[in-house]
Amino acid sequence: MSGTHSQSATTYATYLQIPELLSLQQPRASGPEHDELLFIVIHQTYELWFKTLLHELSRAAELLQVGRSHDAVATLGRIRTIFKTLVSQVDILETMTPLQFGTFRDRLDAASGFQSAQFRELEIVLGRRDDAVLASFLPGSPEHDRLSGALTRPGLWHHTLTYLASRSNSSALEKADSAEVRDVVLNAYRNDPEAALVLERLVDIDEGLQEWRYRHVKMVERTIGRKHGTGGSSGAEYLMSTLFRPVFPELWNVRNDF
Image 1: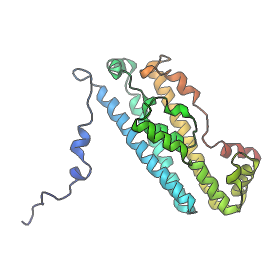
Image 2: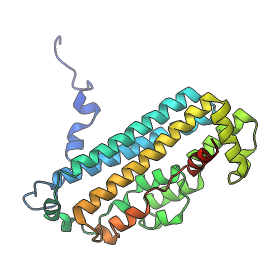
Image 3: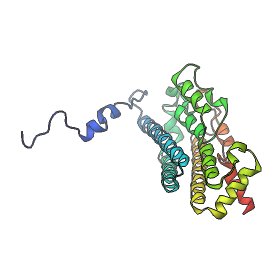
Image 4: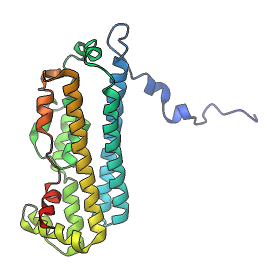
């Protein structure tokens, strides 16, 4: 009939599954406590952005493998912009005072950000190779299996070395810890503008991750001080130990040779 929509027509709500999405916020405090909804929404949003980052990083790896520099630069730039969004969300969390967080904190039980499998996978893709990332997940669980698999696959830096080696006829990939890597990176900066742009986007991402870690630390310290975090974590103390630890140290160290 003219002017009507078929029941099967896709709508904004059905395409984005809005009813299902809005049903996922379930505050546990009685009442519910006013600020718990904000806390849940922010962290669910983080998980959506982590999912997007993993999706984009996979795309960036594919583009580097086939040498599509301009497309890789665009994808890496998108990743950096998402990190900026992660940082800006901390501003929203910091509108919640320690007393407001305290009204529902005990209801988190053993829940902790350390249990974010997606963020742990993000660390792995960006180069972390440490079985300690598995500690928060039961062996045999989907999260443990997913992270174990990620630990066996090449990270973004590996794909970057493949990309650089293909442009310089170098064996740097085979000697990833050697001075040859430094030479290949330095040569890219000096003689290969396209590759240099790719490397600078990686530095942007590295800096963005460090910036997010810093804001996260200060937010935790501002909210719970130096107390232990939920789930028995060491809270701000552990987070501070992760600061200023670049994921692409080669791209920072080479600056001493410019």
